[in-house]
Length: 254
Ligand SMILES: NC(=O)c1ccc[n+]([C@@H]2O[C@H](COP(=O)([O-])OP(=O)(O)OC[C@H]3O[C@@H](n4cnc5c(N)ncnc54)[C@H](O)[C@@H]3O)[C@@H](O)[C@H]2O)c1
Image (cartoon, rainbow, N blue to C red):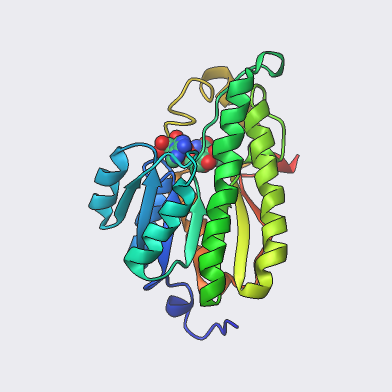
């Protein structure tokens, strides 16, 4: 049980071992950097070979892997546990957000979105939990989205995958709480990365409308999402599990 005697210590990630998937991406690499600043060590995993350079700059391990390939989630978790001797934190952050009108959504785009955004987090969490159960606990954080709560035009497969991730989070939290594992989802608004504001959708008229519907009047920054992750990963957050924590400037409150 956490006694809030020493804020620095309770909120610290000192010597914790983590995996962040999508670690070469806009949000994932900032989470890895924050965790490292807070004293943790671990691995960034990404399909992009850029992950090696990103990890090296942060003093972390880089693992290049397509996590949809059979056996890759198992290998990734095993490799990290072998290198660092344990696994305390998994952040499922890899994701894609292809857009198509619902009536035109190609089957293969649907399948790939569900595979990366939902099946991979399931397999990664399953492997991580096996390691965590043996060591008395851990933290699993699933990167969902406000699009898992409200409909957004053209986001059928994405919304479905993120809503599924929020449901999966509750189910895992329910089963693994007794092992000292907390499982939580984070649902950000549009965050300034290449996936979103760096692309072609969240610009112009669409961006202006979304901002008009956002009480704080701006999109998010990766650092704001990383700060929430760091809190959820810390000992101080031991009582929070099965939650979907919305970090959206108020977009979904009305
Ligand atoms: N940026 C936003 O506006 C926003 C908002 C809400 C939620 N999210 C979620 O946050 C997460 C990170 O988003 P981001 O903006 O950093 O996107 P990003 O595209 O910058 O990063 C995603 C990373 O996932 C990696 N990836 C994709 N497929 C993979 C696979 N098969 N195996 C391993 N890695 C793979 C990509 O190479 C990429 O580096 C995603 O799950 C996204 O859905 C983002």
